[in-house]
Image 1 (tube, helix red, strand yellow):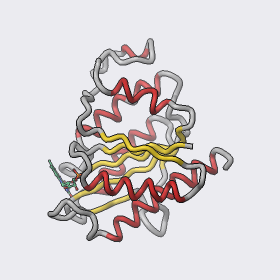
Image 2 (tube, rainbow, N blue to C red):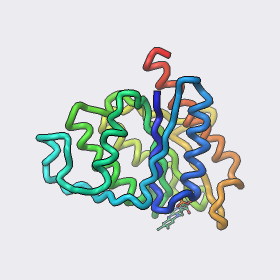
Image 3 (cartoon, protein in one colour):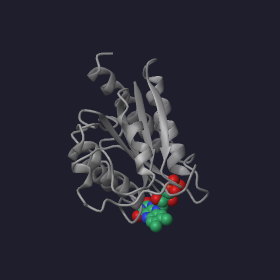
Image 4 (cartoon, rainbow, N blue to C red):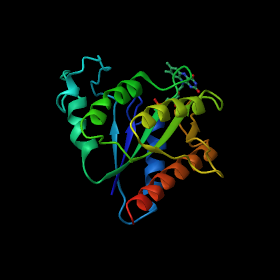
Amino acid sequence: MKIIGINCSPRKGKTTQKSLEICLKAAEDSGENIETEIIELAGLDIHGCTGCGYCRKQPKCSQEDDFNALIPILSAKNVVGIIIATPVYLGTMTSQCKAFLDRTVLLGRNGSILHNKVGGVLAVGCVRNGGQELTIQAVQASLLCQDMICVSGGIKSAHFGAALVSDSNDSIDCDEVGQETARAVGKRVADVAMQLNGK
Ligand SMILES: Cc1cc2nc3c(=O)[nH]c(=O)nc-3n(C[C@H](O)[C@H](O)[C@H](O)COP(=O)(O)O)c2cc1C
């Protein structure tokens, strides 16, 4: 069973990546049969949806960009969960995140690929109350539109999703509480996915 993490930062390998790695490590530690993969959107050319309707007729997008390479990865039969990780930009998700989420409409129109997959969300901002929870809920709205099953980190940890704070050195080491919310989300995505898949 695979859980895919999407890093929606335009910066490779920075605080969102580190947070997602912590989250997915906790997912892997939750069950022997859980494997994970991270896709970094940084450097990929993924445009926003143009609403042309092309994907209503075939499982393809009219735009020739890097999203097409992600379709088979996201559609693989062993994918049971997806964790969306985004920096907070002006109180919500990055434009890279929104473009990616909008393009997944293709998966919904061609076999409801994301139906009943478990979804978790992680947001990193540079201040404690910088909009992480609003960002998490905005992403969850998109996942719900795809019939995904959204989970949080649980009542004792993160009521909506993982919320982390980065410092001026581009580090999350200072935020042990936030890292714990990342672990909690990873574990819950894995636990619920295993339950749903009878493991
Ligand atoms: C354009 C822009 C807008 C931002 N807006 C916010 C914000 O509203 N709230 C916040 O807490 N941090 C904000 N930040 C800070 C980033 O969310 C933070 O530095 C985050 O750790 C970056 O993730 P990355 O290191 O993976 O790129 C903003 C950064 C940029 C570049």
